[in-house]
Length: 361
Image 1 (cartoon, rainbow, N blue to C red):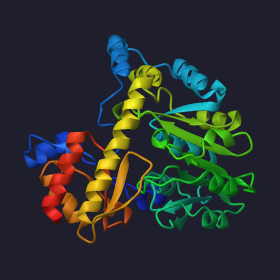
Image 2: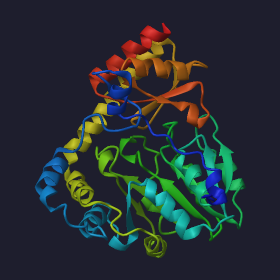
Image 3: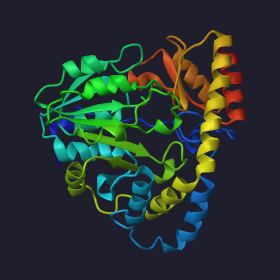
Image 4: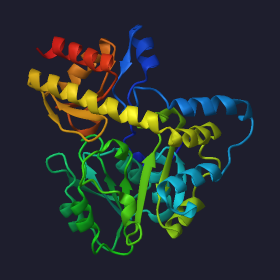
């Protein structure tokens, strides 16, 4: 039997996620492992989300509410938008695929930066899109250069704000200048997965630009709300764009426990505040220690830090792994001189620094 995949699939370089704790324990025979690789919330899930989920577990023999009716209402109320402006996904990652399915034909152009979140390019390649790659400048989006690449064939421009893996952000004036005069056929996909951690005054709220632009703003419950394992994300746009995305969405794509947990997490303001504080204080500690070691890093507005350790960064990441400290090897991004580390609990941050010192000092 001969299997013939789509030509586009042959060009896909699969996304490799960070190793789970249990896999590292099993492979290396370790008992005490910490994960600082996937930008998860080290404080765990929202307590209110856990309580709500426990009460609902007995109902998981039923299919979930297909349209996320109650979650849709809760998010719409929080954001002060209309319910029909929302679409929900199995994590905000799914919304990348739905955007491509709804608006990009094979051979149409999309624009991505490099290095940025790998799934923009992975999904676009699998979909058969023609991809224009625009290099970052000083670890930031070069929106002027990206705009120069836009033409009448450009269907989607992907922008992560803040960016992963760089931890930088596009300022308000940069976004506004970029949005001016774009072709009517072009959609801007503004990924705000890490927006909850940003405290800079000139950071733009993408929702403020929906009325005048073909814009899809995506957010997630995986990061600040601590629900990564439940995979709940959402997109906000004008009702017409949402209508086409809904047409290609799989039924029951957001599981029932995810919906219940997200509704409760949205109300848990204390947990969100604690999460932001933990990240703020953790970054302060890590910055100080990295400076003392002479290690260069990119100042971050997110819950992770990109650290430059030279050509042996990948080797250092592997040595940390053998000590039970999982960090992100940046080889997949073509950033061999870097590693990315998620801000953890105080004890985790100290353990990472302690083990890193043993290796590089």
